[in-house]
Image (cartoon, rainbow, N blue to C red; front, side, top):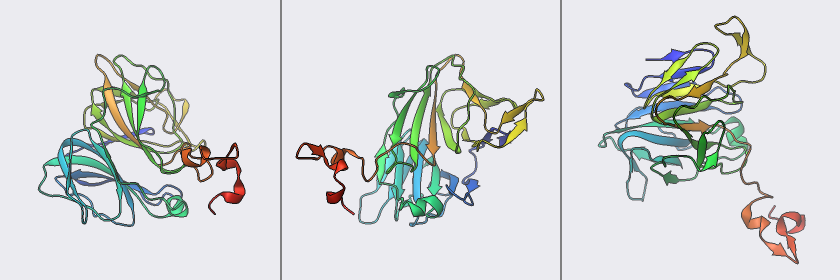
Amino acid sequence: MRQENSAFISFGKANSGLIFDDSENQVYPIRYYNVINGSGVTLNPENSYYGFVYNGNVTINRKWLSSLELNQDMYFSLSGEFTFSTNSLGSCILIEVLDKAYYKESNFKAYATFGGPIESKGRLKYIDGCTDSLLISPVKKGQPCLNHLHFPDNINQTQHTHPTHRIGIVASGYGECITPFGNLPLSPEMIFVIKAWNGIYFDKGLDGEMYAIGQHAFQTFGEPMNVIAFHPDSDFGPEDEFHPMINRTIVGGISANKLKDIMTK
């Protein structure tokens, strides 16, 4: 069952297919699907895809390569031609990154990446005692990424917003999304979208005051919670003139990232 307020949308998992369509976004066009037993999406080889298996097993078929079975709590990114096997019994969330707007301008294509299962907690420090792991890094700075957030028990997160949508699922545990517009429960396999705040729009909270669209915090109680979150953009990642290969190539004692005349044009 879908629930929504001015910060947060949660979706039921019973039906396969398109659950959130932001394909007309002028900068970061995406679509969000629930894929059950291999059904629920028509794949386009021009686009890129990020996924997380939240129940059972999902099998991916790629031309000229062996089929790959992903178990619960595993994740992936792909571009080009592939299909989901309809013989596997399992479910995954799938984010489709459309080949237009910023993604086309930046020549974005997702790497073929497979990983997991996710770990019990994140590798990086976040806020308010939470941790996170960057499961799939941006191919280049500014491009999408996939993250795992770990919330220990009894966390009361600071209210905050995000500049772009956060698209994800509760991988395990229970909690609550606390917003000025009303609270919504968080439970395993709950698919969700946290709305972006563009710095302009506000809405009236339950107390009659005005709050930023998308303002929220996650709260846990007697058990930890793990969440998968897709970001359609990033402010982090390698750049053509700043990445490990070029930074650590030394010519006459100088990093090649400072030698414009020998950089690949």
